[in-house]
Amino acid sequence: MGLNDDSMGAGNPIIGLLGGGQLGRMLCEAANPLGIDIAILDEKNSPAKQAHNTNRHVAGSFKDPAKIRELAARSDYLSVEIEHVDTEVLEDIEKNGVEIELADGSLGTHKPPIHPSWKTIRLIQDKYLQKEHFATSEKEIPIAEQIAIESGESTLASLKDAADKFGFPFMLKARKGSYDGRGNFKVDSEDDFEPAIEALGKLPLYAEKWAPFVKELAIMVIRTEDDEGNLKRCVPYPAVETVHEDSVCTKVFMPPRNVLEDVCEKARELACSVVSTLWGRGVFAVELFVLGDGSLIVNEVAPRPHNSGHYTIEAVPYMSQYKAQLSAVLDLPLPEKLTPRVSSSIMLNILGGATSKSHHKLTRLARTTFGDDMDAYLHLYGKDSKPGRKIGHITLTGTSTIEDLEGRAQPFIELVDGIRQ
Ligand code: ATP
Ligand code: MG
Ligand code: MG
Image 1 (spheres, rainbow, N blue to C red):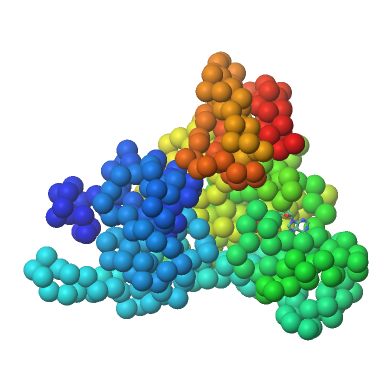
Image 2: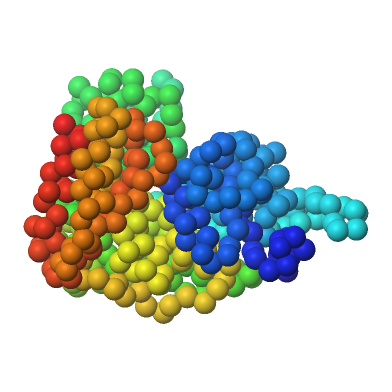
């Protein structure tokens, strides 16, 4: 029985969501027609709050323990749209619950299930520990070799150790809090040691061997488990190719261009192995590198809907990554296979340009494109445009090959690339 039962009589479940950005917004867009209520903890008028009207939202930071407790008290389940949240309080809520006032006025303890588990979120927050976990799990997941970098005065010596071990270039990375490559520094030679320390030296760091990849793939996986924490199933979406420019994902191709079907299938199996080592229900993104010989290594995992899965809204419409997240959290039945309803799809991120109007030609084209061979779907996130900020995306779907769709998509691709000039 949900907290909502008395007030609405419909027994609609309430999912409390930490974070109200575009992922939360698209989660709300999937939840609205299903009658699922989403209570969002984030700033007033955040993108997700704009898309879902309820009196249950909480205004504040998803890093604030008191606000997280307030959200928990009014939710049947808790979930996240961002992994950079306070996991201590989530652990405490799982173990001890939060106090709520019952219908008769007395006080009771309320323990909303948390999916994915705080254990998964805490592990994933530290990219170094996350990958140690994968590599040392019984699944022996392949990762780029890595070593922890000492902080303070030992950093320089530690960087030299990394260079001795990996050679140049290698990647220096912040262990926590990074996104869109903002915590990464490519170290090409000893001359880069000082600028690297200047840029990242105050943060806990680790170094990774350079991965000479020929492609980047991402796989969304739905993970379900019972209320006792026993894994039920991992169901993968198709493999997609992600293209990063200046470390930011700009384009996603489904299916990947020039990648053998066999490699895509191995990537899906590997992604399921990775996700099976984690805890809780929900969708997970597994980012992978494909090396020249077709072998795969895992780059990182996101424990939530992901930019690389936006295409599922139109390409797998009966079970988009957002509907899957809702279904998994609520433990509703899920399909055994996720087969796209289109033969090809391209997702283009709209990043803010030099002026607030830089993307207008592109959005106009997206609003006016439709046809037998290519459809265009525009998603704007209700965010102010700032240079480099993700303010929306366009999904193109096609009825033929990915190469054919890429050809038809050229006017879009040129406008997208033009915004970044
Ligand atoms: P996200 O927004 O995906 O969370 P992030 O800040 O966590 O990004 P990473 O995924 O670690 O950053 O790296 C961003 C990009 O940098 C990767 O997609 C890849 O293009 C490149 N990269 C990362 N690690 C390596 C590596 N070891 N070798 C070569 N390139 C790498
Ligand atoms: Mg990351
Ligand atoms: Mg990444």
